[in-house]
Length: 624
Image (tube, rainbow, N blue to C red; front, side, top):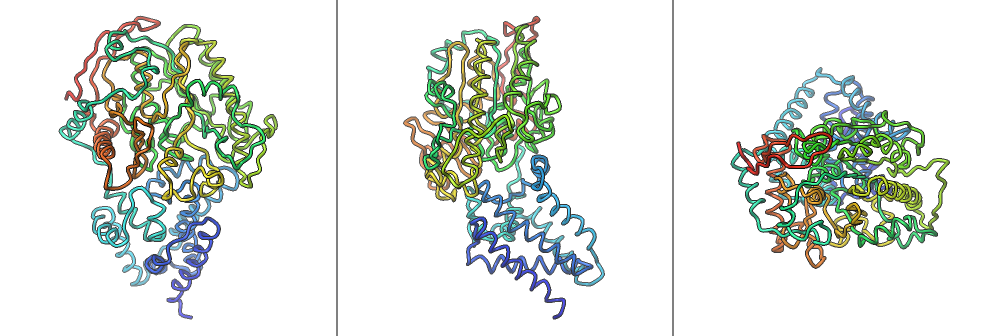
């Protein structure tokens, strides 16, 4: 058999093999009608790779690895998170490798290292076909980067494109064609840094739009904005706890838990807040986007980690604003410090201190995950001096225990059993058993030590419960395919328990609150009356907006969920869509651009040890 037929043979055999693995192992099946296009494009890739290869055996290994990443890698990500690999995932690769351990680390690292090394080892330009292949690759690369519409317009016109349903895009096109199109779309949809006029117009639209306060009056310390404006800024400690994968598994009726996983005492406390929920921007991962929202007051709207490449400036987020008021601002997370670029992100947001894994005694571990119990205890020991000195502080804690695949230690035996055959359903329930009880002990201790302090606890995202939402599907909570979600399912998909305890006033009844609206609420509780970036994302009249990649939904005043996926839009969706466009422009200006819309004010100089009065307030927004 001539060697020139080798790419044809390898492509055919590998395509069939990976198609079967994707279909039967991960339930991700490329549409039959799209297979010819995808297969032919992969065949072109194979011949280009073959032309640039010195050794046949290395070509075969490389081809198998590359197709494995494209077809099996995408299927794995779809089964875990509901969507395929996106270009921005390249920037999250470091964090992925940091979080994996044992065989999982090597399963991810070895193929990537092999592809890179074999490409270098096997590269050749000894034949005219190699020059032709190089020309084609370079021409395609230039087109993707500088003229992506040349590729997108005709192919999107033929195959269609869903801005919110990437799984459907993948199965409509196949892995190779999908990768080409999304790479081109990445460059076509690159973030635009607005000029002064564009940024100021968007800011004016947001600030002058008629709004009503979406936080219930009962949740605020004053009855009206006029009364709030008359009050003086009142420093109080704020303790924020982001709980890894914290959720209430009792809604999984088919699990038939023998014991309720959630602590009864925590449930009673949560009930007093009428079961308030946070609306998270993510599912199953990307914790940093939930952090960005709860600290900076802007929505994370794309399928990318905001900390990695879209937080380039020093920004007056909640830590920065409070530090300017004399607060001590501390972030604690028992993971390696560089994960999700937290070292740089925390500094840019205004944290003065960041305690990471090496700053804690690792005396109570669940495999590599530090228990919440020892994390809370050690943080309290570290901040006890400030508590006793009555120095105001922002105490921000990100827990790590509760991460998939939910390991426990010998000191934490399984307490909850389930009839479910999905492994994660039982494993997660036992994790929540301990997380909720350790959380309640922390809350009770903190309320005794700091009775006037504000305590915020919430889950960063829902837990992973098996491939293709298996644990949720089993109980009818979600469907296996996100394209089949009902509006109520979309709300469930991002809803996690939240408690905001306003000192001696107790838990607030806040309903379902998008995480990006938490900082504004906290500033209101402190009677903070200066302009801030949180003013731009004040809620629209009669609705709360939860953006997700490619879509958003509104929770209306009557509690109904209004989905905004694609035209024709409802009146509410048209309003919220225009609002989100303006929010995006201002966000790009503040976090990545020249900050034309950054509110201008002079930080007051406070007498030690506690600030009591506001010295200067400048409310000129957009001054140049």
